[in-house]
Length: 257
Image 1 (cartoon, rainbow, N blue to C red):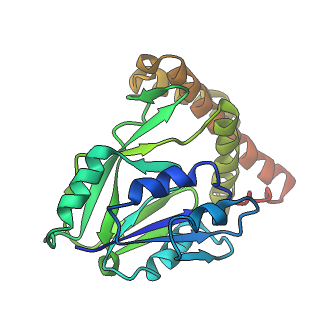
Image 2 (image 1 turned 30 degrees about the vertical axis):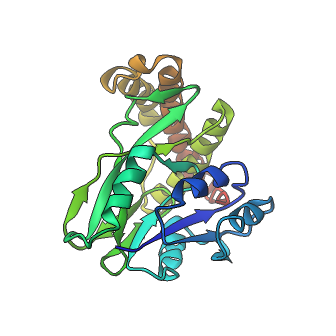
């Protein structure tokens, strides 16, 4: 089993090195496809691989599908720049290299680290995703809001997690919520969906309470409270922006990747 590790990037000079370092000794090659970064992302990438490419951003699924076509080996390990292979996962992947698995892909759990602690609840765990797969039997589908890997065949489970470091600050988290609420509002508008006033008033509060109580965000301490409040905030922004589009009859300008 030979593995091609594939990473897509945009302005990730601060987080990329740790991601690429975690792939050493696991992947037979590392491929980085960058969306025209304006920082030193390319410089960091070239410290670990010669397979560095530039391509203007389209959307997440399309960018990943393109990156996967550049792989030299049949098995692809897809990793984001804000992720790392845990030591346990590295050990599992090294053992897999000794034989050809009968399945088409492997799902891998993700564990997120946010505001100084690992998040065990709040809807962030379990977060199992197919990240190791045969290139000829899988394809990314969806858009920047709902992207998923569709696999043709059996999927087995790995136990070692991917360590995820999604946000360094609350401000960065809030900015991501703002970005995705715009994308979601545009998608809802394209589907002729409308945001009733009752939805705008009630759903944000319900979303916050659901994350904090039903999804046990309260057990994640202060980070759990932040996650719950920003979940409600995102629900409010999505509905408010959708309502604004209908009232003004124009689109909200999309955010870059």
